[in-house]
Image (cartoon, rainbow, N blue to C red):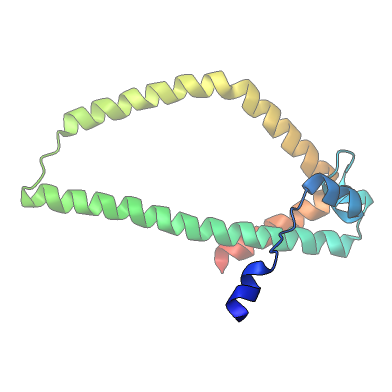
Length: 150
């Protein structure tokens, strides 16, 4: 009987529209809105340091974990390749590897030269952001280093 009653109940879910959410929650709009401007104008120095420190720590911690995982995967792959090569399971054509690596270097240099103006623009924008939000940025760097260390 309770099973039939449960089937007759109308389950409804709330759909969250982020544009409506931003309009209703002014803190969201102030922080991430179009005219958000420098954070320096909105929050106290202590709040800026805490915000930067917490986000920096999270980024540093994740960077450390992902970095360890990537290093383990790459290092383990090379180790297995060397063991397989030494045992005679795999023969590596080192001349061909060297040729392919040199080819890849040339392609990377070409692509890097093409991307240079975009990278310079990104660097200029980042530098401007850091200048406008020096307290948050310094908190982020400190938190990032702490996250790497933890």
